Image (cartoon, rainbow, N blue to C red):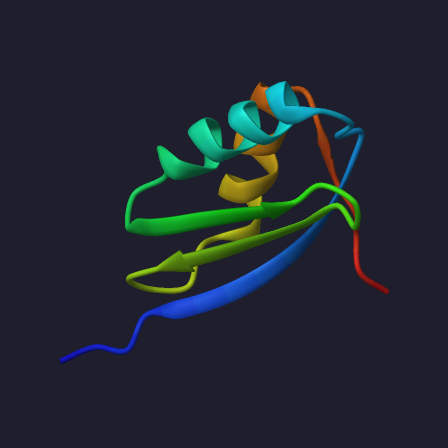
Length: 73
């Protein structure tokens, strides 16, 4: 049995429940995603997936929803 991967991302531009819904829907469409949790006050998006996700795929999903992934580092 494979252990799911959980990764937190910092996202900018979210300010309301519509933002949460849009991010949850777009990221949730990525292959292997099992759960998406959005913490609106902090801008944290935590994704649980069957395997680690490609950062470019996450960035593209967030872009489609209208938000930006904060680059770490």
